[in-house]
Image (cartoon, rainbow, N blue to C red; front, side, top):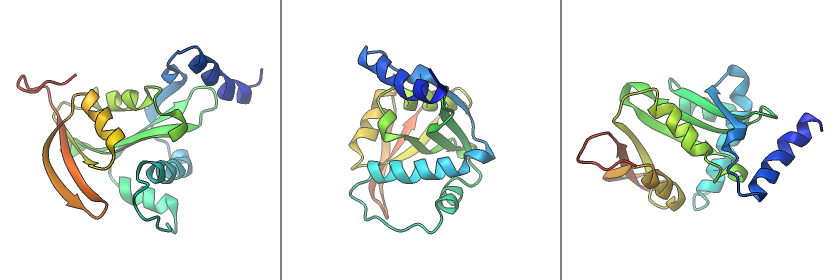
Length: 175
């Protein structure tokens, strides 16, 4: 069986058997060669995650992605078999602010987002913060399952958001 078929077929076979397939990814620091796949994933997952936003034309996906993640630490989830980028997380380390966490829509529900989140929480001491749009119910549920809690609300051009925090304070129950 060639590598392309393994990359395509193995996750499907495992999923059919009820096996979570996050084991088919490796989390690693982003490389310069990841720029185009990251920009494409960034655009595709934002479109899927925020369907209520008016689509805007982006002259350069690479430029938009670079602007959004300038100065941030970026980790990617890469498929072990095909090496394709299936998710990423970016964090502004000085503020411990998680700016982006996206997983390819067809790979969501496999535990990849949890692995990406763990790559940051194992790297930096808490507390961490992030903004999550109120309308993004799936993301809010994901963060709640991982012990994030709202500390304030605000508004942005994309809509209302909650500022979420994760810390290891005893008065907060982080899962």
